[in-house]
Length: 240
Image (tube, rainbow, N blue to C red; front, side, top):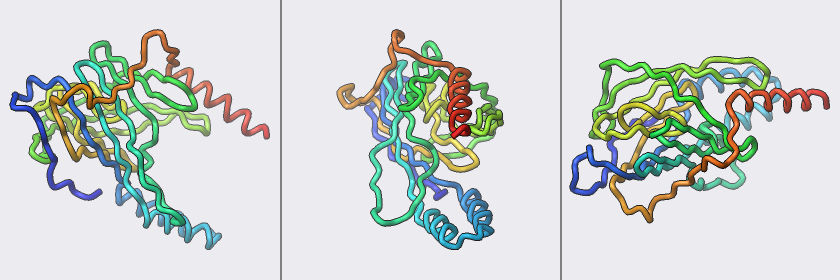
């Protein structure tokens, strides 16, 4: 992950405590250790063509770009249109294409999944301490959590998450479902990739905001229901 030398900040002449809206740009890139480990593993593949294509795709990797739009209690996180290089094998950041809607007032976190529908996420149980670092001009504090996920192979597993949030921007939003901390999340570290804020635009006109809200009358399934659907899909797939 390349070091971000600074965060571009644009805001009205008000204190951060009066933040009511904003657009945050995030860049997601694969971590070097993950790339190195993956390439080492693929080198043992006996198929030379597959091996070369996979290594080429990782060497030609491209970042993913996302935006977080928020106003008062609502936020919407989505991927921006990415340029595709023709006739070149490449991989993206593995962060996914799913959209996220969050209402911080009622702790409602919804993943908008084109295949599964609207999926509710439970708020994460964060633990934080006094460990800090600077991201751009903001002092950020470290928070950690572990989330439990369901594999397509039919088992549960844990994934460790590290988030860096800044109380200087006192909103409880962040990328994906990594929300609920006492300050804007500027960076998220996962084993495969890192999400980092690269541009912050605060207190902007509401006509510039794109927030797709999930209404209370819209169908939303739980993560347990999603896991059951995945299990059924894999069962049907294995019967073929």
